[in-house]
Length: 117
Image (tube, rainbow, N blue to C red):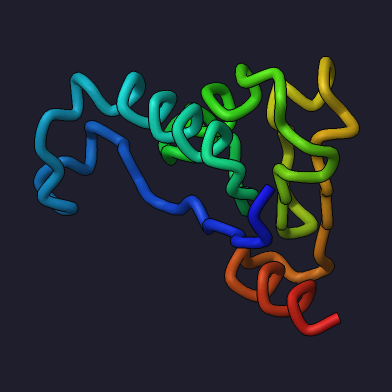
């Protein structure tokens, strides 16, 4: 496994297509899963923030977690304190996740605060 950590962020909410200038929102789910598979297969670790269906992280994690050879703690979750849900793969692969819940209400600060420690 490489030491490289890839941050996965981005909206894929079809309701925001015009605002974000999103194209081909009909293939976002499958593309995100394929990205997750590719990153896991190449041995990259991933950093995610939200399992919300409005963002790509959930589908990338689905693809990533489907690869059997992923290392312990290779899916890093940085979440603000008010995060109300968790990635479904945590239930079946808890040791593959490194979860940090920050006291901040913003994902940006959750990431910075944990990186500084």
